[in-house]
Amino acid sequence: MKKPDLSRALICAGLVFFFCVPLLKAESFLERLSWSFGGTMLLFPEDNGNRGGPMPVLPAPGAALSYAIWGPLSAELSLDMYLTQYAYDFEWNRALPAEIEHRSAWVFGFLTGIQAVAGFPLGEKFIFRGYGGPAIDLRIITLAASHPDDLSGLPETDARIQTGAIREYLWSRGRWFLPVLGMGFDYRMNEKFLMGLDFRTWFPLYKIWSGEDLPPVEGWRFGLGLRITVR
Image (cartoon, rainbow, N blue to C red; front, side):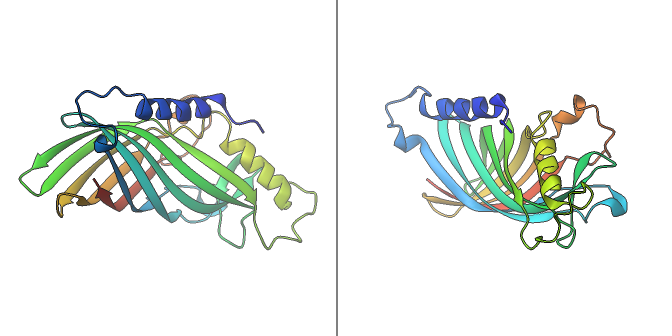
């Protein structure tokens, strides 16, 4: 299935945003860059009763590249990677998180965000950050391993059919578009290194136009993470 053109446009916009921003002072481009790495615990809340698996709680390594624009303002390109598993419910016509024994597909997610960041010092050692912007979930969806017998040809049990349905569902109606808002605190370890704590929320805006009758918590994502920034 061809992926939505808007996802490519957002990626291109991010590249332009970072590498074509005018230099406002005599500082070199590289002097304005900083990068971060760390890990986040992602929570995907769901309310599907016994039809789906428990709420996914997923470790997600990540990294970010930041460009200082002016004063407290920066632009940031972030990437968080996760792995989870899904099945497809043909009665509800949607993909659901699944336990390992009931899964049909692996989903490799690459949460990519373009954020505007504002940072404010709190004393000499601490910095508060607030940020937000568009984000997309670039998912690679593959047939789960250890299912050689689940090829019955019936949609309810055939892992290949379900994997195709999961791919179609997750990549349609803008379900990959998840704007993000976040806040964080950094501790200045020295002039070059910061240790930080982040909390982020991804918003399922697609629920506005998808026309589905979904539980209120469906599609929301929350992340609590640690990160180290190198200047």
